Each structure stands twice: as structure tokens, then as C-alpha cells.
Amino acid sequence: MPKYQLTCDCGAVIPVGVAQAGASMTCPGCGKSIDVPGTKQLRMLPLVPDQATTATKVSGLEPTGLGAILARALAALLLIATCWGFSYGGYLAYLRYNAPIEFGHTEDEFYSDLRQRALEDPPARAWDHWQYIVETGVPDHNPPPYFVISKVFENQKPWMVGALTCGVVSLLGFIGVTMLSKRSARA
Ligand SMILES: [Zn+2]
Image (cartoon, rainbow, N blue to C red):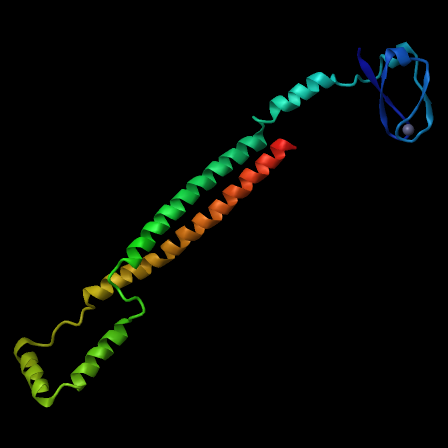
């Protein structure tokens, strides 16, 4: 049976059926007694939406709702970012920690070690070195390959740290989004 929306002076909306036309009832909002209008006037009032229809509409909308789709898309993106962050960052970290490089060792230290060793050479050996330079010319002082490799790893370091951070943040975000969407689905 259709129900009509009777609005009380206090603003409360009371659903009333045709059977209650002409009767008086107590408002659940303010407790005052209100008169339900006659059948003719009652039919002019807005209808209370059918509760069964509304319920199915709401539950039918929920899994395919825009919010749910966005949450799922966001979760998928975060999962992809997690996989990328951990795999790329992990790969770079693996290369770095398996590299035969001592990362604290700078080029300056390398050359000052060399100079120190040259100063400690006995005079006879210094003479030999001098003769060698006279014959072959001053050797090129390009950085040895060790430092070229070391520099490559140093340049990669922000990428490694960034990728691993991205992995951790995305994983936390994924867990957060999944928990939130589960909670809203339950509510
Ligand atoms: Zn009222």
C-alpha cells in the first residue's frame, strides 16, 4: 500500500497510509498531535519511495559505484607501483651490494694514497720512476675504471632509494585502500 509523506511543523516527515486519513496521530519528532488530512488531500502529498525498490537500487549500485571502481583502480595502480618499486629498487640494490667497489673510497683518497706511496719510495726507485717518465712521457691521469664504475653506482643511488621508497609507500597505500574499501563495503 502506498504511503504519503506528511510533514509536521517541526520538520519531521511522517509516512501515512490512506487508512489513517482524517485521524490524528503523534509526531515522532516533537511529540505533538497532528491531524492527518482527508484522503483527497493526502493523495496530493509526495509518495514515500518504495522501500524494497530503494533497497535493491542501493545494494545494486554499491559494487559498481564510481567510488568502488576508483578505489579498485587506485588499489591496482598502487599494487603495480609496489611491484615496480620493489623489483627495480631491489635489482639496483643487488647490483650495488655485489659490486667489487668500496663506496666510501674517494678519488682524492686514491691519489693521495698513490702520492704517499711514491714519497715513501727509496731514492733508487724514485730514480727508476723518473727515468720511466722521461722515456714514456707523463701517463694520462684519467680516473681508473674503478671510479667510473663507482660513479655509475653513485648516480643510480637516488633511483634505488626512490624505487624502494615508492615500493614501501605504495604497499602501505594499497593496504590502506583495500582496508578502507572493505570497511565501506561492510557498512
Ligand atoms: Zn513534529
